[in-house]
Length: 413
Image 1 (spheres, rainbow, N blue to C red):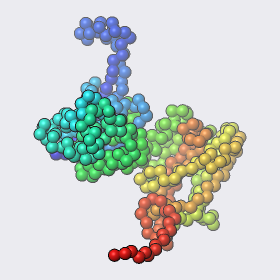
Image 2 (cartoon, one colour):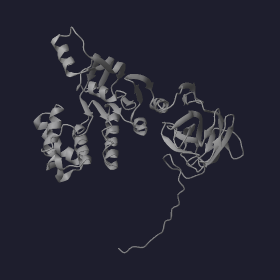
Image 3 (cartoon, rainbow, N blue to C red):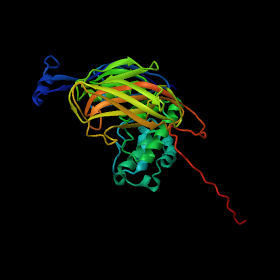
Image 4 (cartoon, rainbow, N blue to C red):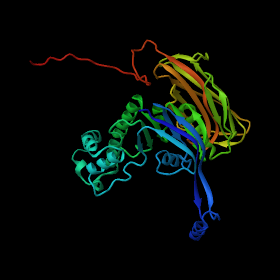
């Protein structure tokens, strides 16, 4: 059976009463008299998720992500619109929620399986798989009240995903687990996705969204404000975060490679140009692995700024951060500029990365991070290609200098 989610004109509102008597008066009037104020958490949401597709939901706290998941899992009813779901759903919203603390892990796992629709006999047949994946050992027969938070995460995830569902919904459920088990869970999620499970993933981790999802939706103020490939949506999301502390304009412009370049800032400074050159000064966009380059940014300042910071970020073709630094991190914290000044900032570095396509992001801001005062942040301002040279073959994104020593030793037979 396939997994499919269709959301049409979905909305959710909550009623706010000035006091408890107002609620009573409204109830006694049988709806003829209104004594509440409606607060819409979600409004006019429309999207479809087809069989085997993976969708990431992102947004700041309060954007409506958790409310959306409650509607999708039918733990809350919509105020308007419809949600159509085809296929068996495994939802990981708050891992451990619903566990009875005095019952053993085994009993709680059995109850989880039965709530997912398995018969008692089927649930007992799955226990050994749950024990094996969770690695709880003898603790499976101990009361859950003696479990650490990480152990409850192991039990809940193992029980909810003991078999592949048609639809898997995950809401930041793995953020409290240990690193080893997080990797194990991500591997299982990726395997299920590759086998055809429809995935809906909510996370603040951009790397996880880019790695697991083919598509992303950005929620803000209860509405969908961006829907597209994760790289572009997450770039826009970063701009939205910066905008909350600055009066910024977000504009979209065509990138060098025909992609989308996101640019935002409060206008106190403006990146005039960005270029990448070889050591001889030639401006090119194709380099060999390990080649020394100079990334030069020219910035114009439209007001006095104390201790401005210029930063660069290199990303791979999937939009994952590969390397980033800025003048503040490199020790240049005593810079001061006046209105009308310009800075020519040149970063010299070796491209010790694997072959492939990469993009460059450049930012001008105050403090260590663009979140403090984003003056101009320019994503995908240029793209470049790294080609293999004469170095030994390798895999991965990092080209590390490696030496190997092999010695022959005799052993007794």
